[in-house]
Amino acid sequence: MRTYSYPKFVVHIIISFLPLVISKPSNIYLDLTHVDSGRGFTKLELLQRMTFRTNARSTALFTKTVKPTNPLSTLIHPGNGDVPYDREYLVSFSIGTPPQSVMLTLDTGSDLIWTQCVPCIQCFEQGLPFYNPSNSSTFSYLSCLSDLCTSLSMAACHQQCFYLYEYGDGSATLGSVSTETFTFGSKSKVAIPDISFGCGFLNGGVFVSNESGILGLGRGPISLISQLGFGAFSYCFTSLFGSKSSPLVLGPATNFYNNSIKSTPLIRNPTSPSFYYLNLTGITVGKSLLHIPPSSFELHDNGTGGVVIDSGTAITVLNDAAYKLVRKAFIHQLNLPIANESITYLDLCFTLPKSSRNVEVPKFVFHFENVDLELPSENYIYEDRSSQELCLVMISSGDTSTIIGNYQQQNIHIFYDLQKEKMSFIPAQCDKL
Image (cartoon, rainbow, N blue to C red; front, side, top):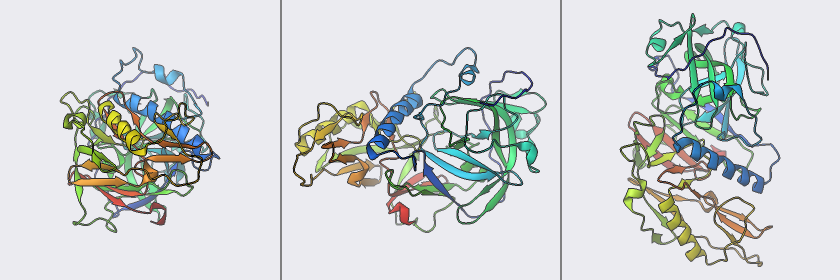
């Protein structure tokens, strides 16, 4: 942790910006790296870490907690846990002129773009140097009279505009609302000026040393995709047990999307406006369409329930009613003994026969409105011959909420059409794109 002197003040801001109008290319290509990639973990260790993060992430997203009396209390005690709570994919690009590298966590469940800055009251450790605005000719603070600052429902000013942004896992960042030139691109470099972001000088929570902040790609007006004004983005997650990066396209993915591809509507939840909700109508396991009550996946008027697709959750979390029926169907159709104890931390594992014969697993289909998405077996089954275990890679939320995690999104090109409020799923070999 590095400590610098800085004027003392306390701010608590709810962010509510209008999108910026900027000049831009038709699209931007970036590479996503999984947070555990290249760190020497075995497949079992990777799965254990995913399960741990999923439990923490789902609890953080949908548990309504009382805010602490002092809103800075989460920042005073930073943590550097070995297993990050909700960090899944990292994206690298540059900020400033000349460019300074940052490594931000991709998060489709939040909006703010921020990175750690100097001078810093309190920063968690990171591999890259802290971004230094004094070394950039294109950095600018937003004044308290700027449209972006005055649009805040609560604002704090000390010669400039400041923010506080908190996350469900207890992480938080506090700093100045600023603008900079962002330089993107894995295939070609694209510099875009005047992107608003948080220059965080007081940051705490659970972070790992290979990230420097968070890149919000949610549906709110201050997220990157909203500021760019593209109206669309897509990604294609490579195998989580592989080493290759995953492609992220900001803008229309014209090379794969056309009018013949079926799409499912995106739903809005007024109480959680950043999240991407879908209308899930049913689930098939094997040849059986499960008798899950339609109300199990409904988004309720009070904002509870519903189905979120999320890049920051590793493993799919089904609402309790649906999970129990899915679990029962796998037990009935696999006809294997249930493992008494599993080292995977997953709820449902079976003991494989000692013979080397392949076990035929039931198919799994998500039935969304207008779209049936059949998952590859590796997207929901984990098989370990050394421990003679076969596990269902899904868990129960314990309540009415459902999250489609990135494990289930592997090798599927997922296109978010924000202008037409719909999503498309295209099977793909993501490491070949």
